[in-house]
Length: 108
Image 1: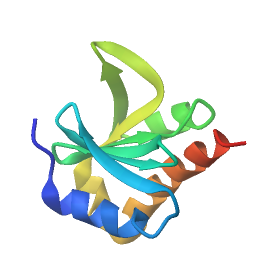
Image 2: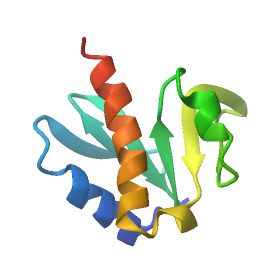
Image 3: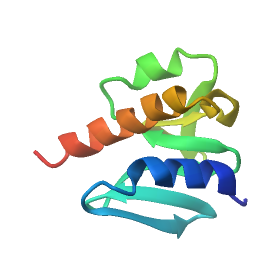
Image 4: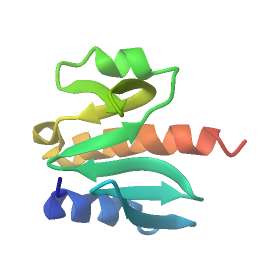
């Protein structure tokens, strides 16, 4: 599956100035990392966000968020956010920041 270049560019613009920022292509998605840890990824028109187990259920309570499945199995702590909900910069930043927060918690 191809990834949305527009959403990819918007995510990149928000993350590119972070120290230890990188990105790579994996499984047909564009993955964004800080210090080698995945923050989020663009897949199709949607965004996968690594939110962690603490806020996972809270995130899934939103009707535009669904479980991320790896090889047909739910991956707790990872969600898919419908791309239609990311058109506004503030909404996009909200989800990127959830990914950053969890990523930074892994460094401690």
